[in-house]
Image 1 (cartoon, rainbow, N blue to C red):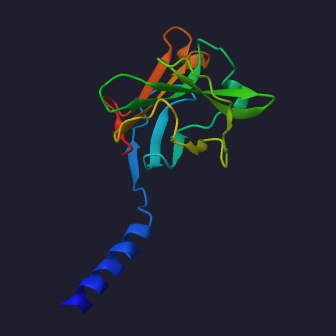
Image 2 (image 1 turned 90 degrees about the horizontal axis):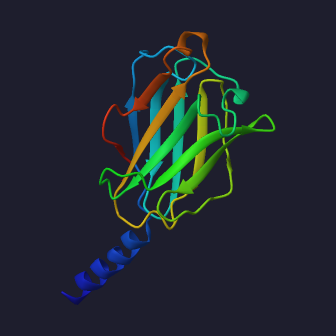
Image 3 (image 1 turned 90 degrees about the vertical axis):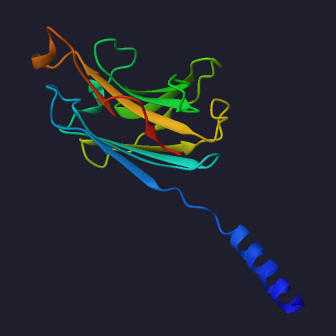
Length: 175
């Protein structure tokens, strides 16, 4: 009996030391909006307090300078809902600075502004970014993510801005 208790205690220590890996979640969107920022896919891999990986794909490619800083006509944003209660707690805005794409994070209630994160662009249709999820805005064990785009400069979007969102409603459960 003692031998089994020792073995079980050792197994518990071994399993407790193995990190839990985050599952990748994916949301797709049809080719349904005119303009260069028609969203195709959002991929998220996240674990509370650990690193989060975010990949946004558009149906058409766009150049970095398409996302000018402080543009009201055109934007690409990642919105984070801590607690998945329907309110946005952290806003990530993609901006081109010196022909390099960055994600700038801003806490809506905290007022925190974080240093820009360099965004990977392996293809003109793909934007990838990762960062630690141990921010003041993330207190809950639930996190929802939304990606929104607005294209107001493409010739097809001049009269009415072309807007898109993934998912269409609610938020994608990151964890």
